[in-house]
Length: 159
Image (cartoon, rainbow, N blue to C red; front, side, top):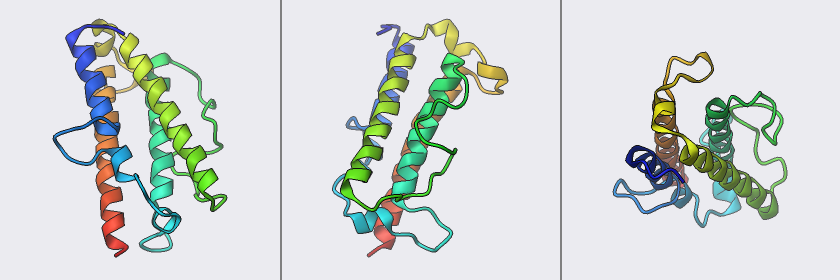
C-alpha cells in the first residue's frame, strides 16, 4: 500500500463510508446488517428501488470507479446490465449473500486500486472525465454514505 498521507486518507474515507467505524454514523455495511428478506425486498412504491437493488447498485458503482481508475474496458462487471439491477432474481438468503459477496469484492478491488495510486495520479482526469481521480474517489465514498442514509430511511418507512 502507498503510504503517502493523501492516499492513506482516501483509503480511510472509503473504508469509513463502507465498513469501518466512522463519526458520521451508519456506513453502508452497517445499514444492511441483520435485514430480513422482507426488509430487503420491500418497495415504498412499485416504481421505487428496494434495499437489495441499492446494494447491487453500490457494487456496480465501485466497479465503475475502479474501471475509470484503471482504464479497463466496459463489460467486465459480473452481472448483465448497468446502474440498477432488478432484485431479487431469486428471493433467497443464498442469493442475497451472493450479492453481498459481489459488493465486498468490488469494494476490495477498489481499495486495492486506490492504494496503488501515486499522488500525481490523483490529479489526472480518467477517460475524458470532467472530474479528477481524487474527486472520483471522494465521490464513491460519498456515494456509499448517501445510499446508507437512503437504506436507513427505507427501513424506517417500513415500520
